[in-house]
Amino acid sequence: MRASYRFFEFFTANIRNPNTRRAYARAAVEFLDWLQAKGVTRLAAIESAHVAAYVEELQRARSAPTAKLRLAALRHLFDWMVIGQIMPVNPAAAVRGPRHIVRRGKTSVLDPAEACQLIDAIDASTVIGLRDRALIGLMVYSFARIGAAIGMRVEDAYPQNRRLWVRLHEKGGKEHAMPCHHNLEAYLHEYLDGAGLAADPKALLFQSYSRATGQLTGNPLPQANAYAMIQRRAKAAGVTTRVGNHTFRATGVTAYLKNGGTLERAAQMANHASTRTTQLYDRRAEEVTLDEVERILI
Image 1 (spheres, helix red, strand yellow):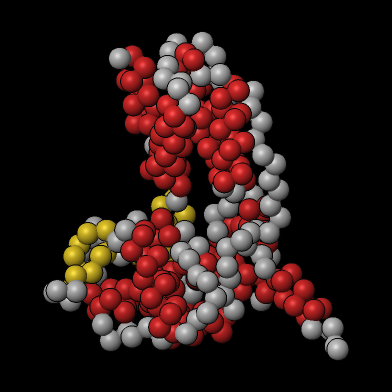
Image 2: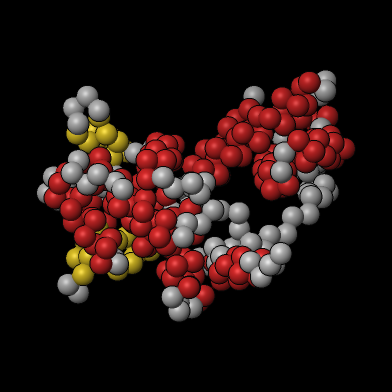
């Protein structure tokens, strides 16, 4: 009974970020299911060899980052169990994860012409078109994470010094404010006016849409729905580059750096704690590589 409560407490009281909670819960359930299939049914019977074997199997079936994430989740969970005197030692503490060094991110980046092609193809005569254009524009021009974007309320788009600003609620409870690019300012104003949201500052800025009524519902736009929307918009615009929610953040950062922006300022604008993270979004070197490849004249 104490073990069950401590396990429940780990995911409720100890982890506040919903994305981390979801990822860690998935890791714990998968590992416990794996143990049960191996005949290990007691926490006290879990040994480092079990964790090592699980990570080894996981590494063969999945990517190295996935294996590292699962191992990190198990380490934190068992640490919590040890502190609560449920387990004598942490069986994951001695297990080494797979090596994984990343110097360039895998997130796809759109060429500026492709980004414009996608945004310009959106029909802005409808409420849903205004919403989608404003959301994509926000991610491109403010480097916003999708989680921070869909969590905004109307009052988070506010005037200051005769310019529209956006307030993003980032991970860890941090707030990050940015002035709007003139294109983004136009997209947001047109969306707020077209959707009739300007009079309700506490309303969610990006809401789900009812096809039956043709109106916004007042409910939050799920991240999965935002992803599906981006796929539809890219396909309709004839964009062949594989895109995702994070693509526009990377596209904005790369475009900023290509036009003379500094890495330090880009990190500040993206709310990155380190420029090393921002460098993962910098794809200028890919253009140099392509230019060199084209020198192969046969």
